[in-house]
Image 1 (cartoon, rainbow, N blue to C red):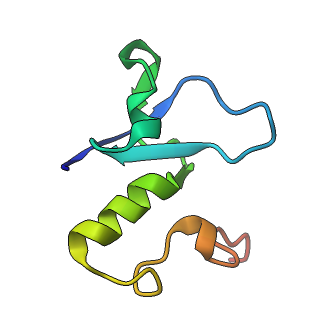
Image 2 (cartoon, rainbow, N blue to C red; image 1 turned 30 degrees about the vertical axis):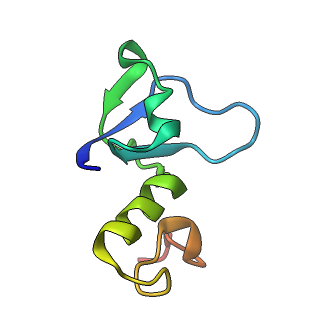
Length: 80
């Protein structure tokens, strides 16, 4: 399992689910994105939960020690 450059699909979700990006070679969800449908970067989207879980396994950190964007109450603040 290795980290790969962040990528997302060119097709945003239309079913109301959260758009996500991937950064792990072992992520089955990320593997399902065809190479021609990939774009580099996160596009400002949340990290894939499967990629996050792989990160936790690789680092040995408990989930509570490494919080993914969907686990944070307000990851993007509009306050300045």
